[in-house]
Length: 312
Image (cartoon, rainbow, N blue to C red; front, side, top):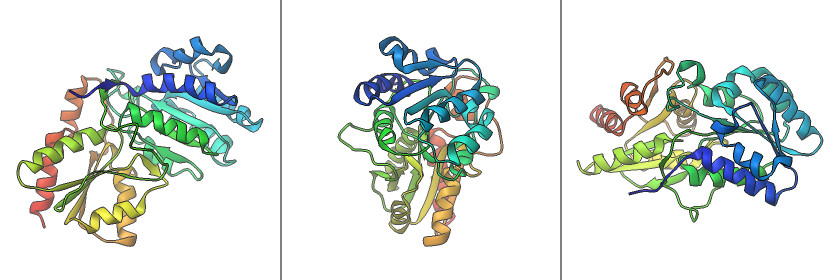
């Protein structure tokens, strides 16, 4: 059985490692330290941890101020608050001046432990990838989240890191390497290209296994970086298969599917479909129930792939 690790636990532990390695790193938190696991750093290095309270707009402003004097601030809060509540502050004081602030967006997507639609955001990738100068990253597991944090800390500029709440299987290795803007080919196939990101990648891999049992050969291309995008990898996946299906735990409007479609319509027009949330918000329910309701399970991915192939 695969090891289960939570991305938020990896975040707290990696923040300690970053602070030990880099004297310029600091963390500001929006009164959610026990949820984001920023409390790990608060205990280990209280001199690098700053609690800003429930004031997300001010949180972004403080981070911008810290960056303006040469520090490397990381911001920890829920994705719903970072991507929407303090969007104007991020746009004006972080993205526009291209300040070196890293936004750690926890509890992303719909699998957030009964928080409900007020504490969920399913269009954050669309929002953040539309901001000039903003790098957008969505790791698929805790190991990749840690690698992404080290890469982002070395990157000079603003970035949005999409993190999930609950423990999940680890499907990457510390030996895989991580590079901003580079896709990961997790499975090579000839019939259909399944392009995915973030936590949805695990379910897509499971779907590819189901399809393999039916003699359907599926490529699985994981895009941990949504901006900048690995256009060459997307084009190569489309060229090597008959069609493309994008899969994401995010709205189909402006997210991964939109990004992939933008690349293909420009460089290699191909038959494509998009799987994701369609013009809806999340809600409170067990994770498995939400995944089933919104058609994101491995069985749903496999079925959509069958339908796309049948339409050719």
